[in-house]
Length: 110
Image (tube, rainbow, N blue to C red; front, side):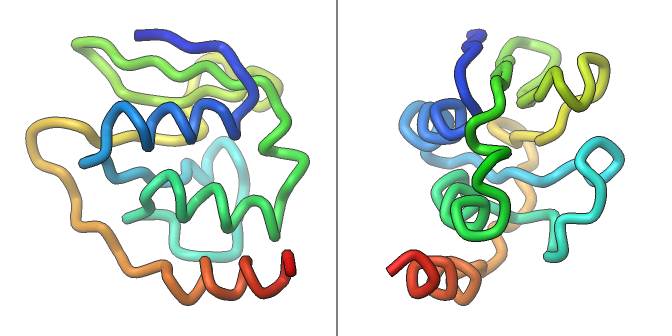
């Protein structure tokens, strides 16, 4: 599966199509994001980015899920290295509790 859409659409597609996923930021591509980078659900990442980095959600992104990788690339940052790793099969790292980040993001939006 490949999908070339804004990052927010790629995150929503990941959440909808792969509900048992866990994601992580790639700080080697995006730089420091100011939070834990591993153990995210797409919906929590979306809420975090809405409050902290909304312009990134509008950036065009390429979601690639095939036999070799499950990743999201943001070509304006790198076409060679994924900005986000998505874990779908095999050993899936534990989902970390980012509810406090999500609650903070929801309060900031309202």
